Structure formats: structure tokens, C-alpha cells
Amino acid sequence: MATVDVIVDKLLTLWRIPAVRDYFPAIFALISIVGSGLKELDVVPQTYFSNSRNVVNMYFVKVSWGWTLMLLTPFILLSNFSFKRNVSYVFSRALSLVVATATWYIFTEIFFHIEEMSGSCIETGTNLKKEEFTSKATCRHAGFHWDGFDISGHSFILTYSALFIKEEMVSMTCVKTSSFSALPKMVANLLYVALNLIVIIWVWMFACTSVYFHDFIHKLIGTGLGLLSWYVTYRLWYKHFLPGLPPIKEPKQHA
Image (cartoon, rainbow, N blue to C red):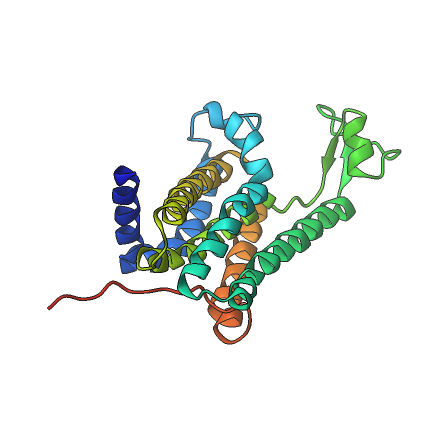
């Protein structure tokens, strides 16, 4: 597993670069604005990813929170235990998963209800309103289009999920300096690499969403709420209250 160790070291070095760490959140705002502009100008050619039924969208993005939890839950438990072998501490830090899941659920429900309440059923091609269908579910089941204020759930969840992962991955520094045996270190290494890969996928699919789907205002609100959720938790709340910020150990400086 020496190759994995090398990859982990390179990723840790990358995330230690101040510009990468500090400006990563701004990437989402930049991509959303530039991508939306390109969409309005209609200058981006259609590709495999312009079809919403592409494999990555169907099997990763649509269940993105499941992927995030599946990889991040064992990583948080393992990496925080490497910092402090105290069950109460580890489970208090794992509350970040509960907070994040609650945030995801509340906002996605709000988005759904806004679209439901603001929309109407439209016959595709004629733009005639079908007054007999009063909900999105019945409208779409009948083969029509529901036209409502559709805040981009993809823009929200991909932004928030990537930033959530980025914040929690810093505790990998504790694993590197821990007295863990080879097996738990190997598991942590593999999880860390997988989390970095999933962040890359989330950023790529966020860019695809920006250039191919949704109206600008819908993407702007979704992205903004994702950034706001990250900022409130990791820049305000967790600095003072449970579950607290993830532990980090800076590398020793050699004279």
C-alpha cells in the first residue's frame, strides 16, 4: 500500500496550500456565475453530461448525500479516534453528520415546497395550463411539465457536500501521526483518497449543472445556500459549540 501512502501525502500537501484551502469555497460561486453565463450565451456544445440521465448523475449525484455519508461517517469516527481515544469525544464530533444531514433534509424539503406552491402544470409544446393537475406529482405522472420556481438542489447539495467533506478531511493529519496499527491506517488512507475523488466528482458535476441545467437565479440561490450552510456551521457554530471543529495536527517544522 506504499502507493496509497504517497497519494495521501500528496493530497495532504495540496490541501495545506493556503490558496487551495482558503479559496476552495469561492470556486463554487465562480463556476456558478461563469457557467450560467455560458449557458445563457449557448456556447457550450452538448455532451454526454448534458443529458441528465448520464451515469454519474443517475448513480452518484442523485444519491450524493448517501455517498457522502457512506464515506465520511467511518472516516470521521476513525480519524477523530486517532486524535483522542475517547468515545464521548468521537461521538460528539460525529454530531457534525447529524447537523449536516438535517441541513440537507430541511433545505431540500423547502426547495420542493417552493416549487410545488409556485408552479402550475403546463402541456409541453403548447404552453397551455392544465388546471386539473394541482401538484407536481400528478402533473408529471400525466406526462406534462410542472413549471415552478425550481431552486437548484444539485447546486446546493454539491456545494455543501464538497465543503463538508473538505472541512472534515483535515483530521487525516491526526491519523498520519497516530500510533494506529497498519490496518486502521490503511482503511483511513483508502477512505481519504475516496473522499478526495468524490469531491472531484462533485465539483465536476456542479460545473455541468452550471452550464447545462436550471436558470441562473435558481443556481445562484442553491449555491448561495450551500455556501451559507457551510459558513454558519464551520466558521461560526462549530468554533464555539458542539460538535466542534475537526482536529488537525500541523507537520513539525524542521530547523
